[in-house]
Amino acid sequence: MKEKHVAKWYHLLVYPDWFRRIHQRPERFLGELVKPGMCVADVGCGLGFYSVLMAEMVGEEGSVLAVDFQPEMLNWAKRKASKAGLFDRIEFIQCREDDVMISEQVDFVLSMWMTHEVADRSRFFVQIRDMLAPQARYLLAEPKFHVKRKLYESICGEAESAGLRMVCEPKVGASFAALFAVSD
Image (cartoon, rainbow, N blue to C red; front, side, top):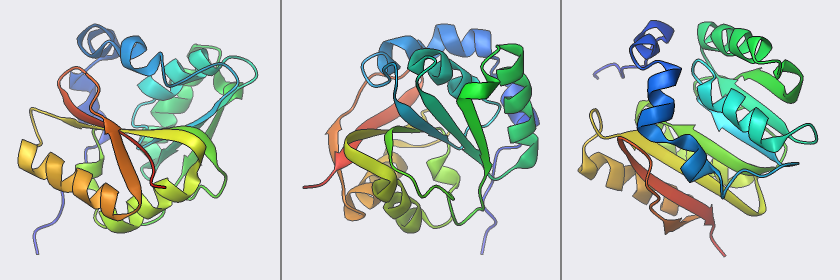
């Protein structure tokens, strides 16, 4: 069986925050989804770009769960949060490859460019579904330069099989993206 590729922290340095902000325009697609006072999760947070951005968006009354299974990623994310003065709004969670390790319900979940790396996506999507509060949303985005449309569509099908319902496909720079809610 072929071993899955999982991005390492140094791979993410080729897509720096300043370029990501211009290229992906995260405020545009997150602006309607992340509001002050929310509890949100950045699953597969990587170097923390979205965790820090969402910590700004949720404000002092909100919180962010930054989740990754690689300690090096979390260390980078912690440094970034500390430098931004937002460390107290973010809880850093080192999950396992097969368990997101979040038992509380949240208002929004983001998984940016990482679900194609998940070994057991069926289990992953059930965990995502279970952490969504009523009316919560889940945004899945996959990189167009790395993930083909057929794989993206298959991933979305797996999410729907786990009890998530696609709401729309928002524009996220350089990405295939789908916004989900819990199926009724």
